[in-house]
Image (tube, rainbow, N blue to C red; front, side):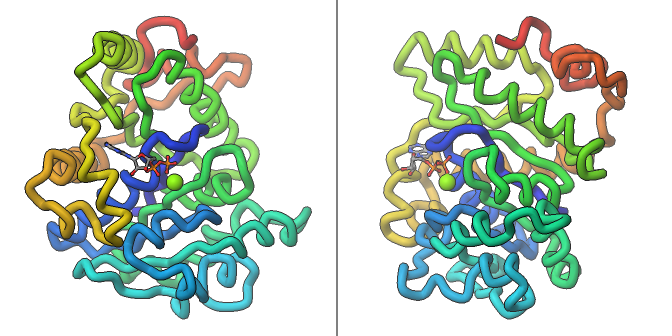
Length: 283
Ligand SMILES: Nc1ncnc2c1ncn2[C@@H]1O[C@H](COP(=O)(O)OP(=O)(O)O)[C@@H](O)[C@H]1O
Ligand SMILES: [Mg+2]
């Protein structure tokens, strides 16, 4: 199963979630591959890969100079493998130009190695970009982290809208596995209100597990360690273990009833037909 961690925004815990979820799944015995799609290589660096050792990386695969199998490396976490990113990914965006099927380079490249893994987690750069599009086209499903700030949902709606366009444009239909509330800080009333508003609006689409603000999660990448290596008793570690468990449950649930196909309907109208419907307006 391939899961993309995607959002319109930077700084919403995509990388933290991709790394921590991957490590949590490996921790319960799953075979996991984390693929870093961000040219800033945050996920790779977070896992302790030195900047000078990022090569070979995902850019080599996408540009066709190496098979994916040649770029996989193991990590300090048993069961967790990694394909690194590097600034070379910027040249992918440039060089790939108008090549046909340019949005499916990742999907095609991953095919030979999929049998080795139970889960492939994609740490996407902010959407839209050709790389994040490659992530969504390759993915069976996707998970969207959201920080409950004012106007947070404005970052959500265009991504949901974009994924609605994927079937017609590229013949793929990744499923929304869920929206994850991250960096939740209940010391402020405004956070409480925003969490309530997002839950009311997107109901079942929102994971029950919330990731609170936890300084240990912010410290772990600097030590080149996952949260489980860095502080396995922290609230961050506990939350991501629970998130992995909820992810497994959600992935096993039958897909919610299909949204209406009428292209004239807005995203919000389509979501009304699905289990993951918003109850109010999408602001
Ligand atoms: N739950 C959290 N508590 C505290 N800090 C967090 C939490 N989640 C992420 N961070 C920190 O916030 C910053 C942005 O997170 P990151 O995962 O890199 O976001 P993105 O990949 O969406 O840009 C990083 O410095 C990260 O360590
Ligand atoms: Mg990131």
